[in-house]
Image (cartoon, rainbow, N blue to C red; front, side, top):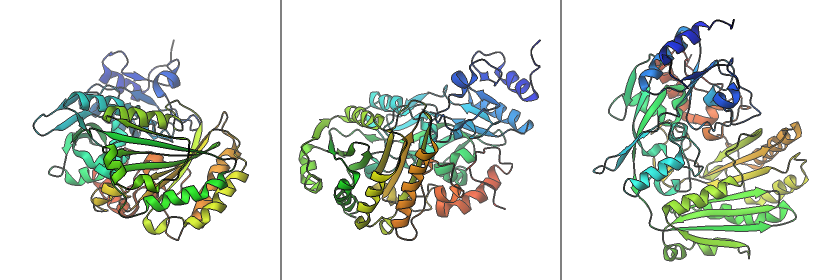
Length: 470
């Protein structure tokens, strides 16, 4: 005879009422492959259950089951957390997989889109296009889920022009710790709405969003400049010129760009939302370094997203792998002085990396994202103009490979002005001992107060989620 179900399993099974594919447990064959599906294979997590609800009422009842049995809850939309936080980030949580929440409708008067939290960005783009040629700001990895992306921040190449993904959120439906299904907006549960626009995983399970949208840009100019050198140090002047360009307060907001270091050299890639004539008139081409190995393409909106997704796939795979990452956000006055990059890049040349799968990405930010007041939402980086993240993959992931990433981060910190601190919660780093402060900065105190109001029992929990203020 098999082992009798636990009290938690009995409760969740009752909610499922015999529905196929509703819940999986560690005792199920192929539980990790078919149910858990971790993204980072270097972070080992075994949830007590993975539930795939079909309605908000299902979620409400599962929350009650978890509460009654002393279990934590985390929701998973696309499942791309760097530390598997959508699975709880540590053993024993109840993971709510939002895969069945794919609904979509467009109001053709207000042009507001209602979107299920399990919708992935690639599908969202297509649905908005088909519903009237509409668009909004978001990242370019098509398999990232809306639920996490639109509540952490949601940065993409169009964010300098339109703001972050969460800046487009007008209203949400959310299931809170008491099991209630509620609406949150500037006019209803406004404090909760403030919190979920930056830290939703600590406050509830969002089932749907209402987004504002924009007309799709008619033309998009996309470029890629590739530099192949024997040494990373040779690229320091090129990076310095790029950083000077993106640090200009008058830098054209229609322009999103990245500088990507990799084993064979570097790529400057980016997107300009406008016509080729507008691109030339912006003065940007004259500021970019010259190389014979460059490409320039003009696409429509959908074509531009496919192009960006192909570029991103070169360094951020959708496949589950063992990986590690470090990152840092920069204000204009905490940028690393360009005179130091020769030494930093020389350090990269000499470092023992332990893998050929490594990338260091510098991503321009600011623009419209910084138009919102610092405390306008829980998102804590309204004053930042640049993010960097390093990313290494190993089979297996060796200690010296992690040391390379950590060492590069220490090089950056050592050369940056005092006060360089903070990172984007989308680049979650489980090694941070002060993760909450790094992710939410000056908004953390209010978040902790609201945690006491909305989730005093810390039901919605991962290793670096918001805690109740003591």
